[in-house]
Image (cartoon, rainbow, N blue to C red; front, side, top):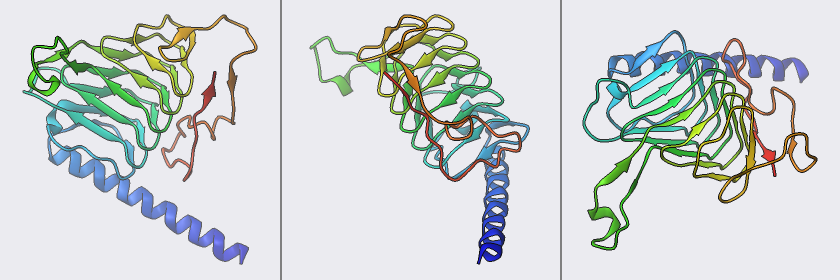
Length: 219
């Protein structure tokens, strides 16, 4: 039985790898800028494929890349090499969401560069979008179910705790938690990161990632 399980596991990994390469090919044909090989599970790109740039990153099952509005000269969603985006994360852009190198993003996150107006003159969906560039710099770590709102920059090496709502920029190396997210003191005992490098979703060199990963820095 252990031998049979090992054979089946190997066959499943091969199937996933072939499916990933097929998704790379299809996205390229639809106009996405795919640089190198990206590890892609069953992700969703509803429209505007030409506004997507992916470079040697890993996107797990259920990740949504939604680029809305007219085409712009630069991609509206850009994800750098070595970055891993865990299951069910939604990246929603009308202007620019840029994610740097070696970023770890937990499951169920929402990252956007826009919202609707709310001045009371009309229903929110009748008001124009308000957009400002959102950026996540290299080696940042975004915990599970975090929300990153428009105009925010997450600095290099910063950590956002699980469940946080980030409404303002985070300095490089800072740790934030809460709703709205607030910076935590460095070296304090109120912030825990659980799991090994593989368990928290750091990208694997061959992009054949484990079936299940979690990313949960906790406040």
